[in-house]
Image 1 (tube, rainbow, N blue to C red):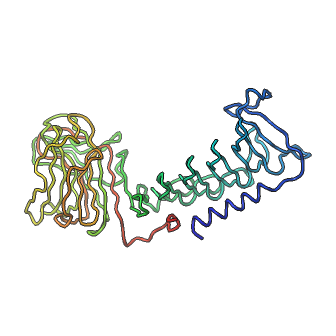
Image 2: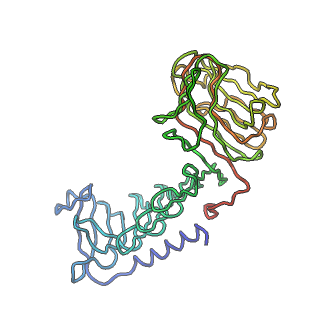
Image 3: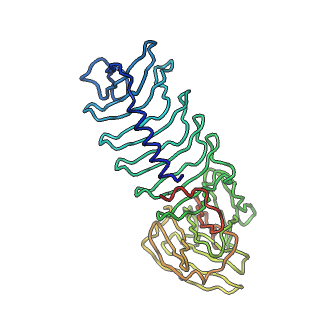
Length: 372
């Protein structure tokens, strides 16, 4: 059963279940904006229709309403904890003031989230789906774009992202339903095993959410991590880079498709508003864009978000969401490593984010029910 059919069935079952009554006359209870109880109807922001059994335990369906009478919540309450908070049981549904469903959740007999919880936007488009067991995220979590197409997905076990996804890997989508495997690094540690080191001529360190290059005047230094995209994969590489001090004309940016120093591609920017891109194949350098000025680049110590996108036969060069230019991807060399790079010149540069997304055509899609 696909997700759309599953969701339709759950909503149908829920509608039948909440329509079941027990014949008793419900009580009316009033609540303030923070759900504190009040006996003053005029101060109430919400009110509740609830039926209690002989033992004082709620029976049947309970409904909460906005002050104007619009349904705010409906579901089953098994009882109350020592603080007076409701213990939900079974399917419960929340609603926006306009009547659109906001959330649908299932709770076990202990009041813990169980099964899939769905969240909608106020216009009725699905926003998020989370699988729970014993009150913790267990299974697939999927976020959706505003148009309802999948945005990203990952697997959780006992409330944590599953280690089978190698800690930093999750699934993202490009808005058309096509998924990418994603590796993101915030540089709080060296989990991606970047090459680091310190000599009299340079220092490459990771600390406090940054990878920092401190360089003297030497030919250039890179730090690499291995990736697994194939030569035919579409991919995106993005980083946030800041020139800290030194020679503002020096370059900093990224290398990809690296095999060795005779075979790699590069995209770098300077702190005075220029960019350069090219490739080295069998030791021969080809400049795609020589140092070119662009108003899209921020100057001085401001952070620049730069990236490349390989889409089919085209490489697109980006800075701060704007396109700087593009080139044929077959002019580039493939290789298993990507890197962050600083050219010659005495300077200090920091990178505080790295993102690599790729489309692995050979990997099984874990979540086929997302496409509905």
